Length: 267
Image (cartoon, rainbow, N blue to C red):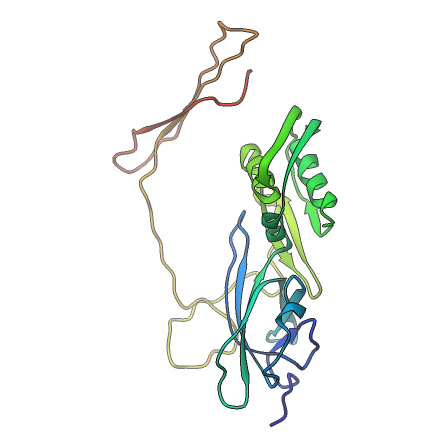
């Protein structure tokens, strides 16, 4: 049997070549401010593929869409394995993660002085050899006199800084790369091509002509109604620095407060 991707709706582009692997199944998860993970089940006519030739390398999938356009899934091979296979084809499993995931594999102790958090984050990226990121931040950020990365992975460090300043990220997938976008507001987002709206079709045995939602859940959860922060300024020991924010909730049991100290501010 000829092993070819020419007639398939999904094309696999890997370091092993264009006609070495074919996709059987893809299961992925993407969230704002989180590392995506795509689990690929692949087959090949070669039962002895060198797994080390895939690890740490970029891999992409191109999904044919109605109208002739394509949607891409791109990532770094974080894990790969070989299964038992079926018939004449060998079975392989690959996990794709973003390049940001590689920052979980390196740690450091560094000092940054008189820099803003976005500049610190971008310096960490560049120092580790990464350039596929964009700055879509809309707010102004304070300058930190002293900021320390101490015995933590570079991913934990930049994640801590982003969470502290209200910055999140997401990824835009292209044919040969994926781009991390730093954001702090809804205005940084745009509808991807061919996805301004996505139809909902209830699950049936019928084969649909395009990708769609087949299930939908709405949920609500009890939340706290107030947050209080406090801190201490040794240069102004009598200063009152406690602040409080309240949000009206429409559900019961919403009057439980959240309190944290130190708030990491002095004014």
